[in-house]
Length: 501
Length: 68
Image 1 (cartoon, chains in turn orange, cyan):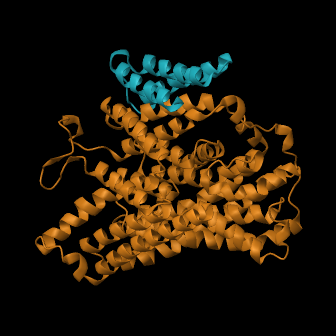
Image 2 (image 1 turned 90 degrees about the vertical axis):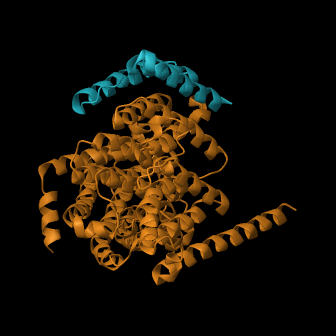
Image 3 (image 1 turned 60 degrees about the vertical axis):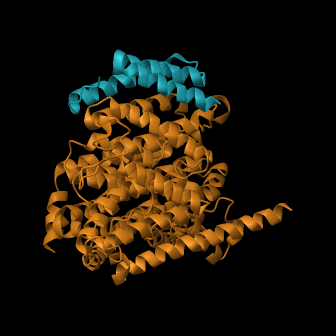
């Protein structure tokens, strides 16, 4: 309770109420532009937060995250291209509504559903995270290491078509995290004679390279003449949602938010999956499933409430266990660490006041999102007109400046460009970036902080990981999940081959 | 194939940033990319080049980082 009140007073500083709308505006625009995802917005803005207080910095990033998840629906509705992957399910009914001339209505419903989903998610974070943190306070280094292994293997399995590619990705991430001087023994690892690599690769540098630069390179196939879709501002008429429409959307929004919260809290999932599940659930339980896919407002409500419903709850495993559920939360976790907060149960005990400020702030973020969104709905058509060829060099400029400002050295610019080129070719070979990212984020936590400490406690005896019950359970689940994913992969591949014959 | 050209731009950038500095080399990179996409209109060039200057001064004045 003390933390709660302290958090409230930290949140009440006026600067926070300036930074939240700013973050939301950035998030909505970045989310709405196809080719710029909210992950990218987060990465590019982290260098801007270096000078800020932790609460302010994290609130700004959360605003970008929430705004981006909502903003992606704008282009999904207007030009049939989701701004971020979380909004893919909004296409089904959003774009048909635009074709029927109901673009304004669809945008309004997307905003309304996003806000409600986001609020429910923020509340679930506020009420569920502290009790879970109290349980995880019992964990020691061995349990943490096992948990990190569990998180890596599950996410490697979920995010790729092939579990082996996922595991290879996770290992690439772990490798990148191990570059530099080892803090316990002082040995230099993988520095290839380059003294500048002694300090290791900064998390933010790796992120800019892996995500931002490779994303720009992915778009090298883009052809401005054929791929650029726009919509004129006159397509957004002012047809308000009627009261009866609001009334029948309550059920889809409720189902969507709930599914969003549950899926979001499961590691290895994320808003996109939540939206698809919610959409199907609402469609099946509807009395008129035949109208879905033809411009049904309930479809927009379901998918948008679900992806924003996942926004807050993905932070539950991240904050309490230190296991991020998807790409965005892994980036947020990196931001927490940059600001001196290492997610995990001890964070609630040590910096509970800041955490409460952040969790309460997420509620404020969602309220501001509604205000800001409803003011700007009319101007959204202009966002679709921004040409990508102009954006690409601007994003690149930000990447370079952000990388340089991290340590004030040119060497980091080389690292992002080289990481970017490598990551691009990995992506062309169907490697997902999320396992790599997770390897980088969890690597130091798993190895330096916990594996080594557990080894010290057990005096070098590896059996500590299997003799402690909780640790053993996590490792068993990790091994089982790898086996299950591998079997499922093999089965689906066999099925695909049979279909070919 | 197009992506290799892109990769070449980035490697070239690595080589020129040390001698030429942030402003000149980034403007060159921006122009390369715009030509690569075949941008025609003059303001397509003006906006990103202007942004290079804006970013330079944001980092210099607000964040006290002087880019090379």
